[in-house]
Length: 293
Image 1 (spheres, rainbow, N blue to C red):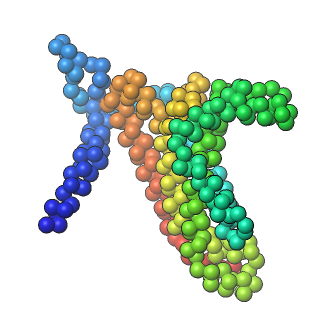
Image 2: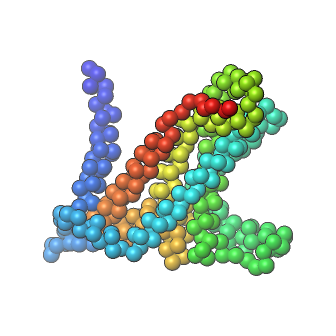
Image 3: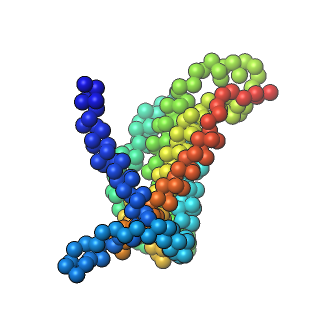
């Protein structure tokens, strides 16, 4: 009877999770183009080619650019985590208007990434809000800047949007982590003569390690497979300056229609995400109090 109740969920999981996952791994070792047809116009089946896709990847200049940009994109993680933790500490105090501030910070999180991308695309335009404010109103910059058209700035501009939108989500996670810490630990440290800085770094932060691990893993995965912001704001340009692995897989699959090579790229992306998650777990798995003497 138990298996009967579980059957619908297992069937859905099998069809939409496990089967695509296993098929994607097999496809990574195949040559399969949606443009290849036989004499009768029928789509050719995938052809097993072993490691050929991975050999091609090692010589693919655009893959190297995309990988480098994805690694650069990971820089949003420490910025995001430090800002979120600092704001969570502030919002954890008993101050007026904090409920409104907490709710306001979560608005970008529940806003569609597409809407956020379109809004910031307008903000970053040559005649957009940011240039108007910095050049015409404040006079901080001598001329208008191509935030999304300058190859040196475009990736950083998109990364800023990721930080801006994700900040509220991680602040709430850290707030939950802070409020789960029994106050007796911090009070005991203060009675023992620990300074506020020592209490924070020797008591609060160690007890926040499970939350740190969760936030770090989630934000690393999100940063490494970023796609929507890139697609909406820059389409990987200018000159591939914002092409990340996630966007490059999309281009290979749905512009070049090379599904085998796209699956190989996706497999590599999955391996990188697995390694990053493992490193985070290894680093944050040990918690507990530390000596503040």
